[in-house]
Image 1 (cartoon, helix red, strand yellow):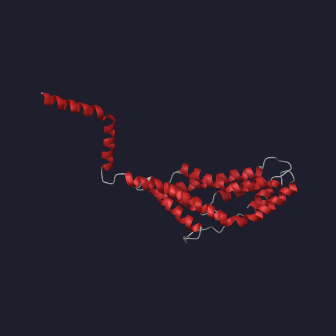
Image 2 (tube, rainbow, N blue to C red; image 1 turned 90 degrees about the vertical axis):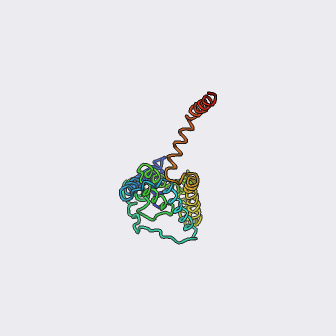
Image 3 (cartoon, rainbow, N blue to C red; image 1 turned 30 degrees about the vertical axis):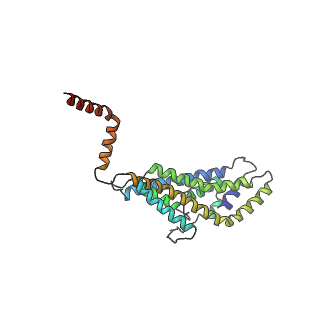
Length: 249
């Protein structure tokens, strides 16, 4: 993908100071993420209704466990299913004119995340969007994920940017060919990100499970006690004063 988008950008660098095609690709990617996030959240709200006794912390805990499992999968410690679509973005789109249309098509297709090869970090996000069923949050999370996927292209563009066009093209060619060598490091980074997200999601669940009341009616009693504690000092004083008056009488 980098070998397709970046050359399109450099094809216009003599007349443009701003990488317009790369900007279009980024905006298309974010738009694709927003659409898929909203669709997944809507789908989850239609096919799955959270029981009244299940809180959001339970959903977060389940997604946190899933993130930890896929973090172990990234470093080949466990073997869990990772469904992948077979469709790939067509390379023939690169000949579409103007280049901005091709960049938009590439961005929307790859930013959606689920149309092409799925990154391991996306599985917990998909699960959370479906289980939570909150359209705004799902769209924002998917948009952020799509935006992060464009960062390597921006890094390649900035690394290859040079006053000498031929030197920039040589840098780009070397950097693009070297991307495959970074795959183990990228997998390790994905595993670390998944592990961090899993721990972050599981921590509130564990802390809440230790302090929340478990007996029926305990929540109502706790709320009643808390409300009395805020206004109960005068009542207590009146009770003490009334007892003192009865004793003195």
